[in-house]
Length: 273
Image 1 (tube, rainbow, N blue to C red):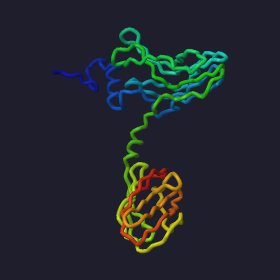
Image 2: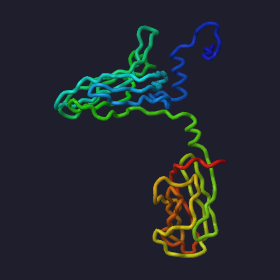
Image 3: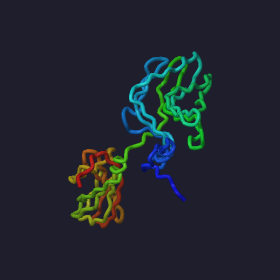
């Protein structure tokens, strides 16, 4: 069976938008995404009936749409004593066999004195032959004539460089308080792991006592009082860390052999290899 070589020279125009969209959907996924480019369609409420949408790029079911300039959208005035949800969306439209377009539109909701519901959007997949498809960007709540804070309804697709960073691994060792031993400290992306076995060489009851040992840069937790090392065995001894590297101890190492475990998130820059 002969196949079409889409990314190949055929001597005449032959690549279709549907083929390009299928490639995008296969690589990044078949859902709807705002890309991490330009201003990511940031919204600004200008007045009681107007919002401005900044530029951005999006991919809906593989179809890429782009805007370089801000766009003003009109929100129909609300009514006193009633509430309403409007949806700002990117609308894909296909006319006839080949003319396709994308535009930002406001889909007006139904006013109510109760709890408002979102208006119905066109959600039949483009791949199934839909000639109109809506990708929701923002829910705009109205209470009377007042526009509330627009609520984002989209996912931002992070670039591959972010995925690479999330898989980067670094390791070092950390000297344990009350011991001559060190245990392994590993970081993968922004997650840190502490683990190993130690022999404590002394005892001492601690009630949130500061240790001399500090956590190295690149492995420090985001939140204060994060358990970074929990020791078990013939002891109950916990080390808590914070963003400046300070370690606080609780419990008694009891001169015991002990196993250690700990997992936490860091916001430190990734250490050099």
